[in-house]
Length: 292
Ligand code: ZN
Image (tube, rainbow, N blue to C red; front, side):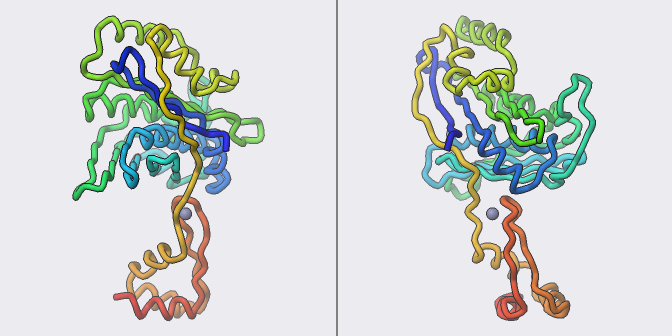
């Protein structure tokens, strides 16, 4: 496993920072969902962000969900992450193709269009914490920056990038997330802004072979960067036959009866990893007894 998330602080705790390299994770998602290049970029950016935001959570069983509901042709995206470097996700329409945008890049903003970004943190409390903001550009990094500022009152800088090979496999993917603590001093903010203005795009850095550590060294140069822990990252789905069967049970008696009448086994795919589970006639007859 080559993918990982690194966590750091800078300016004596006035800044917290994360960076991630996620090419294998995004390539696994691409293969699982057979995504088109623009969808690989969109899902890859959201997976990379989810990985870093998952690493922010402290509890063993904490779960982060990033959900985008939008009117663009991609229809929507969902990513979930835990605090142990496991992420998974999907796009509603993985096949969407679009011409490049005005800058000749994959048109992620065009694929998403207008919509809502939701961040849901299930920290084991009675109610999960949820925040929502409108998409700003649909390019995801800007949308998350806006989310952190307006919904969590945390000034942040988010950079995300996915670069494809000629055969549309993932060449590199990753990003960074830098946040200012409320007590950050003016000169620290100025220095950080200067560094941010001077850096190449995330994809340019990753393509040059920069590691997440090197990315943060550039972004936080002169700001007393201190690395904390490093967490391995992978695309991981915890679906099982039992879980999928529960979903079939919940469809309802009438629908299952119709499936049985069709006389053919039914294939149910996991949304997150696209794994197919087949339910035979015998299975369906057993399941309908548990259904209401
Ligand atoms: Zn799955």
